[in-house]
Amino acid sequence: MLTTADLDKIPPPQPLIDGLLYCNSLAWLHGKPGHGKSFIALDWAGCVATGQPWQRHETLLGPVVYIIAEGTQGL
Image 1 (tube, one colour):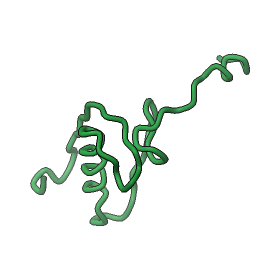
Image 2 (cartoon, helix red, strand yellow):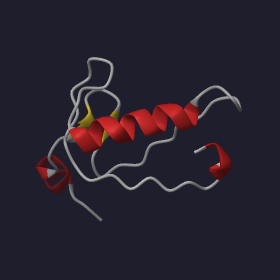
Image 3 (tube, helix red, strand yellow):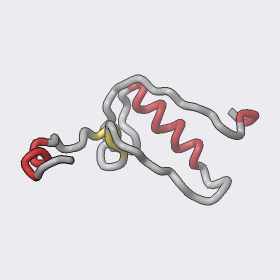
Image 4 (cartoon, rainbow, N blue to C red):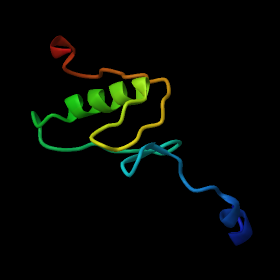
């Protein structure tokens, strides 16, 4: 349990992709099948791995692990 004083000490989230994804958080990318979710995730991963902006959103350069859980034939 944290007190309100403890909560005040928590630093603001650090953006991994500014305005979209944050470090030390959980994100959910969802949509209809076949609408490009995997390609967006790969694009995000590539931008973070190289430190390149994603669609004009700054990224934080860092290591990336992409786990393919389905559709391995297409990747």
